[in-house]
Length: 507
Ligand code: FAD
Ligand code: SF4
Image 1 (cartoon, protein in one colour):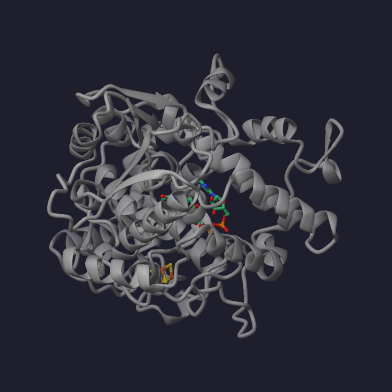
Image 2 (spheres, rainbow, N blue to C red; image 1 turned 180 degrees about the vertical axis):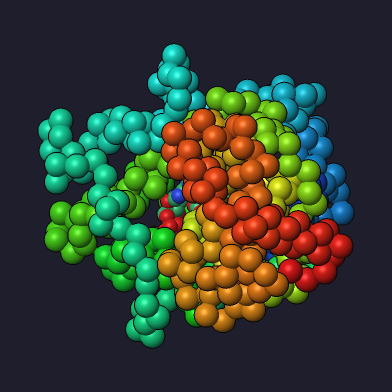
């Protein structure tokens, strides 16, 4: 009897484990289902990107000789859930068994485990470090630190290595990175891909089914095939990689993408592989076209951070996304869904998220993430927001970044201290503050930058937890040295701000 081979929307590589296990006569099952499109209100561009990429990939599989049973969202027989479609297709083809590649989402792993048609789940080996290898590395360590994991991955892959030693004599060149950026009209913009007929059909479908979701559907410029993804990578290598290190942490009101790659959706969908991307970056450095700090910094994001957070997600298990170590309970303020705001930085970060489904790392971490953490927003609500609004968001990568790195809700598994800052950091790294209602230099009073107020409010709310942290003790000493009246004014200002926010007033 034929078997079914399940290919999920973020498993669009011809060498996925389940496809490699295929035998002649097996049927590939791909399904667009309402359950996946709506368990959180995904950004319309995210849904369109996934559906169009799935349709293109199914076509490529057919051309490669596969039998593909493809369920479109608007097919009358569609049961609108993954398990429902497996049951329906098993009956249709007389199949008694399903081969699947492990989903990057605990909810789906659980659903497959309960599927009445038996499912064999194979490890997803698109990662350089398997779940088992990561668990072995983590075993017995008191703290998991990305930097040490990264060195192991450098040794394992041989990327930018000279024998046993890192190229250039250092593992990490970040002291050369992270500068503010200047507006530059000639900085090349990332490529945009004009929708083809398949994408246009999907765009019409998404417009009719998901109109209520936050985010603009058009203009839609994401690539939807492997060729598009390769073109995006080529463009990045040639035009943006040389400045990637320098501009990695900078933010500009008029330039939402700076020198970032915008390849996370392609990596996460399977259209690019992490190792091929890193080999191309290494080759640019070897050819002398990009500086070592840019190449090393970029490779670290992929074989370091990306693999590290995936390992943590797998290790920590299904309850991870619901953690709330700091006991934060506030509702997510309206500004995250495009509500009016007087904070220029939040307006820009949320605005480009609405328009493109994209914000770069520092906007996610030090603007929207920092604000939610300082304001004490329920990390589950923050998690659902990030999972919804970014085109690259899938649980295995989004949850550790949000719940762990950005909200410290895992109590310190991903990071050893919370990523919090006052307005000074945003002012140094961006040009946002000049156009803001609030004044970044003011520490008290009506117009004081909210980050300045909430920063201290946060530290004092959690004094017991953080005062003993050697990397934070200095901040508490600074606070204690401030004049009493000033301290009272800061805290009263923070309380007043939070009360306005809770009352639903624009902040
Ligand atoms: P670049 O800045 O050009 O970086 C290159 C690549 O490195 C990225 O494409 C990505 O694959 C990888 N990378 C860099 N940092 C990380 C990281 N911390 N974790 C994993 N991969 C990384 N990334 C996602 O892919 N999906 C998410 O859902 C996601 N959610 C995030 C939520 C929060 C709160 C934060 C702080 C970060 C999140 N990230 C997520 C990580 C990072 O912000 C994005 O990978 C990056 O912005 C993608 O844009 P880019 O391709 O232009 O990245
Ligand atoms: Fe953001 Fe404060 Fe700067 Fe305004 S002043 S843009 S709120 S950091």
